[in-house]
Image (cartoon, rainbow, N blue to C red; front, side, top):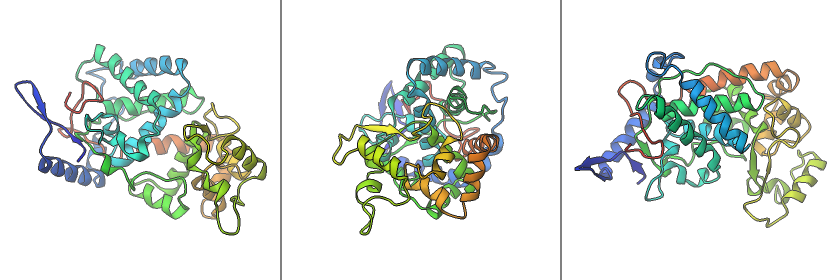
Length: 341
């Protein structure tokens, strides 16, 4: 059934009835298709109530990243996964005692703990200065921008004013996240649901310049691609051998490798240069170059870091508007992991 905000009587929390949960899910579904809340976001939203919020989050993120590099890709990926399901509402942060919240869905089990910890630490720091003012959803948006900048990528102004979602349900995740074997039309379709264009999709895919993937996410390209070719022929032969060495058949499922084999710790346009060389890790990476409809954009980003950085910044601002709750919608959680806080 998932996890919804509870009603509390005499200090004892009880899970909301199924009918209330279903109504909330329907409200969220309508909200995602609406753009009404987007106009209420603005860059100076907390100017009067928590003017130093971005500096507070930036410091917390920088401290965490200095302790563990995984913080950077994990926090960025967490933001993507949150926005693509019920909108940018921090519902992915919620922990359910029943193990059926959004984060518990199979597609989210690979989200690294460092991303969650980054948001929790940032929220704690903000609450110490501005209690009950800043949403977890806004903290996630700020932190996603900050980790990109820490890795050498562009910085950009973040629109604020989101409120936190009141439903977190594992059953809402399936079919709402891009998959590693998707074709260009499938990628375009899933991004278009959120008012994101093909250009936005290609730019946001550049986030694969950071982070890692478990071997099972691309093993089919190495060992069972088709009846006529065991290995995906679009893979660079040298790169394919490297992948096989790192990910032999029946490898430990916990083993993961860098998605960018060249500059894995730097946010740059080398991801697109790798695509041109046949070194995209996923099918969904490779199709961006092999499909003539998207290839010109890949070539442009491969040659011009400025074009990529500009497009990425623009697309991140658009992504941050997806399905937002504003005004009287949602809540401001004091604990990002507790939907009742």
